[in-house]
Image 1 (cartoon, protein in one colour):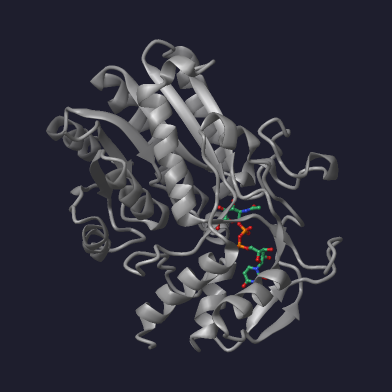
Image 2: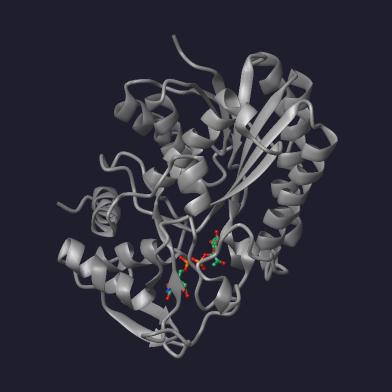
Length: 348
Ligand code: UD1
């Protein structure tokens, strides 16, 4: 028998699709919702090929209340939701702030309202380490206790406001709403099968897709945004976490909400999801070559506006409370990203 029916908004997106696979692996009934604004229906085939099961799917814009309500009328047995549906490009959010506020905030408000109407509701929310900004040196690695900093982009602000919306809602609906907020560091890589992975639109903004596209010959040269930071090699440091490890953390969060909510001290909990290790941009380029044998031409350019210098996670709370740990070696992660890029480009 299947476990509970879980709604995954943004379910055909990058992290949503990998999470759908892990939910199936854990025995849940999986319902994906997406409007394909940044993904494609092929993703459903990829999930089916990997798991042997096709997820239930509804094409819907979660920021459209009436349309979203219809989904809930059709699926009155949704027990819990994982909310990914959101725009995520920092630069675009500066140019189109209202589009970001509307999509990212309305979707969440609608979800909470509609879940609450179902009765008891459990929500896992996709947040970001961006809420910490540049932590003070003494706060590295970053635990959940580190102070939050004012956001530097409308995108980052939507994550902070969404966290506030969930906090206020959890307080107001103590008896019916349980929430887990997951703050991701830098998700990378693709499913080992190369059947699902990241699909950046246009020129990639994130580092690893730019690396793999340069390796594949789509881009001439990778720009390294600055080597004059106060880090050992001068380039920025991040905590790169494998998307499949990250997906498993969502299953652990779901199990806590549905089966172990009695263990929750509060009806809202926060977890940092990272490996606990920081890698510089130059180290990542080097590791990519070691893992794949492919050299990526790069040049040092000026700093990118809004970049934080260094941030990596202290995942101890997630390790302990969720019994979850990011375990995949970085070499395997980078190889998975390269396998996916080669598959996309038809490279042998
Ligand atoms: C940021 C946010 C993250 C958010 C994401 C959304 C932080 C710490 N992280 O990720 O929460 O979800 O945006 O897109 O605020 N780089 C290059 N050349 C490139 C691309 C990137 O050198 O062509 C460097 C960047 O300067 C950075 C690192 O690579 O140091 C990672 O960049 P990226 O992949 O864009 O992620 P973040 O900016 O860390």
